[in-house]
Length: 158
View (tube, rainbow, N blue to C red):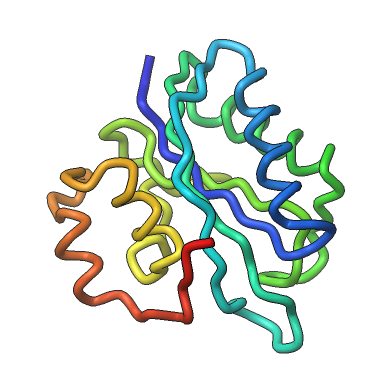
């Protein structure tokens, strides 16, 4: 069993409800146990202008699934919640990202872990630090070090 941290985000179709429903789906995933979830945070959208703010969180999961089967499960949950992949960084009903998968480095066409942009996103680092403030990433950096250099982006705990 590996400890995995997942980023959750939504800015369409009742985002808080989308995240709560995603947590239920994560708890029902095979070979996995949802351990806990951070609080919810409101953040300014990245990408195309005119989007509503996002609601974000980070969940901690223990799983016996390998990385790509886990990714398949997460994408199935996104699809069940109406996720459409039409515009990069566009508005979405649900976004589930594998941030960290144990101590693994993964660099494939479908998956990169640690998540390649998590280091510059406070809506990932702040909730991750809420769950595991002393976490040291596979890169050797601590969350505290990363948070010192991360832009604020109007992050607000809700």
